[in-house]
Amino acid sequence: MNNRPVEAPITEYLHRKASHLRIPLSGSFELTPVCNMSCRMCYVRMSRAEQEAIHPLHTAEEWLSLGQAAKDLGMLYLLLTGGEPFIRPDFRQIMEGLHRMGLLVSINTNATLIDRDTVDWLVTVPPARMNITLYGASDETYERLCGNPKGFTQAVNAIHMLKAAGLHLKINCSATPYNAHDLERIFAFCEQEKLAIQATSYMFPPLRRDSSMIGQNDRFSPEEAAEYSAKIEYFSNGRERFLQRAHSNELAGLGSDLEDNCSDTEGEAIRCRAGRCSFWVTWDGRLLPCGMLPGENAPNVFETGLEAAWRKAVEEADAIRLPAQCASCAIKDQCRACAAMVFTETGNFHTVPQYRCQMAHAYPDAVRRLASELEKK
Image (cartoon, rainbow, N blue to C red; front, side, top):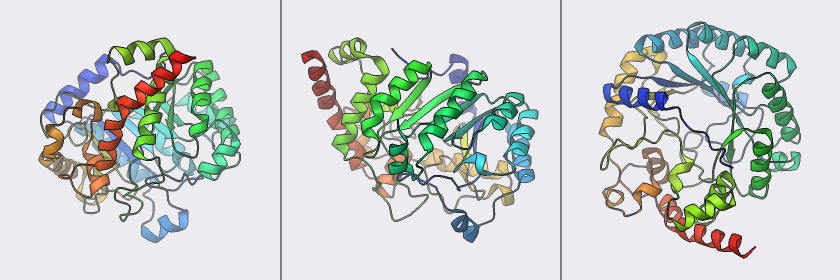
């Protein structure tokens, strides 16, 4: 068993070339912060009233114009996310327009709003991939974590319909104190359905939602997060492979929970693709190197234009240097504390992110304990 998603070599190659040339090959459009669920650890979720008090949503025409501008600058891969993108009445108009541009569009969704009519429509504009977050293995867990007492049933029904329609699916899973007891069943469901799954036990502090939450979230302790990271490795690889890797020190470590890590960056520079070949546009129009960063003063693409905003993001990303202490740490390749982790945990890019540091140092013992438990059974 190894159902962890793997990036195609051509995709990795294109991103490496784009990173070198600073071409915005990948973009994310955060179409709305509004969601039909209220997950405890979410970094962006707002009610409609909260959103309207801050800024009106940008129109479908504005997002489509931005999509064309991004394509002209070199964007090929586009992620549509939220909030919950399917909550927008004009989502189909946006998706259809971007699809006609020839972009490879993926969608982040909780899948609870997807019905038969939606599936039939998606078949006509098939996404490159649908990333569905599965928050538990029961409606009770969904109610506890997400405030939706029917969420699991809704999500699973949608997954079955989407899968039967031949659409490309990937499951995401965020392990928290409110759903950790379901983790094994979530992986078993994905194994049964032959679905790729990517899970993490690390939750970013939600500075986008609340700037006072530096270093905080409704999440595990660092040691608990390390324990569940070890379990994720076990569920992803199966017993024999996990034990083999544990005893051979082959485990990739905590960085395997994270997407878009690039190994071609040296020293204290930014580790990922953010601001090098990828960008994120927030629901109110701010262009950020990474969607986890707050960026209150980031340029607004609907006012300054995409090209100027992208150049600003490149400059900011190139200027980022991670903590000097992290650069000399013996387990930095296992920890892989990215720029967004450092900033959201500390409020700056120069201070060691203690939560992530403690999690990384606790991980080897967590692997050893789990391996020992498995061998005794």
